[in-house]
Length: 88
Image (cartoon, rainbow, N blue to C red):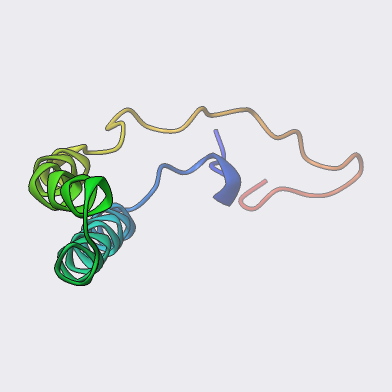
C-alpha cells in the first residue's frame, strides 16, 4: 500500500507549534485585558479584569489539547495503466 502526503498524520512538531501559537495568542489577549482594565472604568474595567483572570485557564487547556494521535486514513492508489512497477 502506498502512503500519499495528503493522508499522512500531522507531525508532532507541527502539533506542538500550533498549540504554542494558540497559547501565546491567548496570553497576548490576557495582557491586553490587563492594560485595558487599568485604563478603563466601571463595568468595563471589571469585565477586562475577569477576562484577565479566566484566560490563563483557557490558554493552558488549549495548549494541552493534543491533536488526534490516530494515523491518517490510508487509501490505495492504483498505478496508471500500462506503467511498470519497480521490481516487476
